[in-house]
Image 1: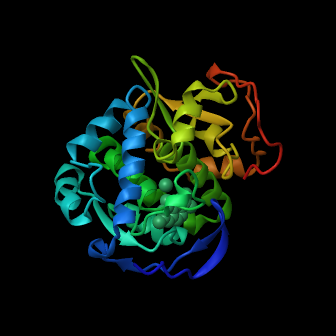
Image 2: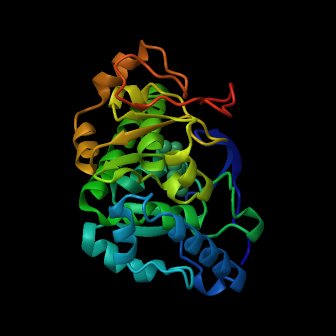
Image 3: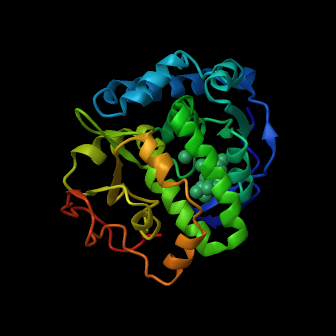
Amino acid sequence: MDTPRRVEHQLTDKGYVPVYTTAVVEQPWGEYTASDHEVWATLFKRQREILPGRASSEFLAQQEAMGMASDQIPKFDDLNPVLRKATGWELIGVEGLLPELTFFEHLANRRFPVTWWIRKPDQLDYLSEPDLFHDLFGHVPLLMNPVFADYMAAYGRGGVKAHGIGQDALVNLTRLYWYTVEFGLIREKQGLRIYGSGIVSSKGESIHCLESKAPNRIGFDLERIMRTRYRIDTFQKTYFVIDSYEQLMEATGPDFSPIYEKLAALPSFPAGSVQDGDQVFNRGTGEGWLDDGDV
Ligand code: HBI
Ligand code: FE
């Protein structure tokens, strides 16, 4: 399997990463090597061992419902009919990170871009950009949940609008994606659980986000999140907690333009700060935090 064509490195909200062509590619399933399938199996089994009791029950249930398994890399062609029937979403293959507007347009049309290649065996624990495991294992299961699926499509429409408004609006919206879709926690009867894809696809952060004393855990607040910087190179300093996927959908229903205007005049918050008015589940100790590098 040839390595993906990298177009250029750009400074994005994920740091200085290669931004790929916007081409939609067929999943080259027949070209995956035994090592590729082995990487999938290892990561899948490792995460499914630690996620029960840590991940949102809806995430675990939907991943099973769609038939995702460890034995080999799933075929997009197998998953798409199931996904389309559940919520109208479908997976498309891409080279990797897309320019933001392209990404937003796909989401607005219920197309989720999944990177076609998977990391190498020596990258099991860290990768600076999303690969197939992050996208397929992490992002796709919750697209089976009608409310979350609607949220993701609404997010895409919001992204297209924000792109037309300007960079400040984009930064605010990217923070919302970061603290919900990528690194969000949800309150369930038995306690806090993970739904963010960046966490569920990472062994270290799946454990850290719930069990470490270092991070803050704060109740979801849209404007608070849009003002809060974040980390792309370490575990998050703050995790935001939703009560339900419905809360997320309701909170992002209104037009964001007046919020963008209001926030443009206000300073942003450091990633690790606790602010007056926060619904504080716990205030972190800050142990191990790096002082610089919030974006
Ligand atoms: N492209 N393929 C891909 N996957 C992402 O998660 C992604 C992206 N481009 C931009 C992006 N995410 C973030 O900037 C979002 O906040 C939009
Ligand atoms: Fe992601």
